[in-house]
Length: 137
Image (cartoon, rainbow, N blue to C red):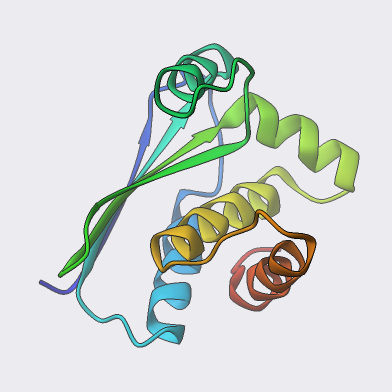
């Protein structure tokens, strides 16, 4: 299976950046020599991502991105992104919403590739890779 990346908007809100999110995740996977993968990106509301966060990770709060690996070979995973949180963070970080959506999609893809962000050094390494792979303006 070649790279197959989809974006589904389950938030009910309008957004831009689907093409850039897909391109960013493709660039991330190719940068890690992954040529066969399926990644489904789903945009949610804060309320829905909070429900997922509580149900699966036992954290009772909305978060920006949650990643669920489904299979290792070939790589298959799901990335859930809160569109509401992405908009707030874009404003806070003074970047475009498209840039923030791409960052969150790449962040999720890096988790699928085995990266962790529990420690400060790991977060910094992931942030550097996010900057490397983001395809947006």
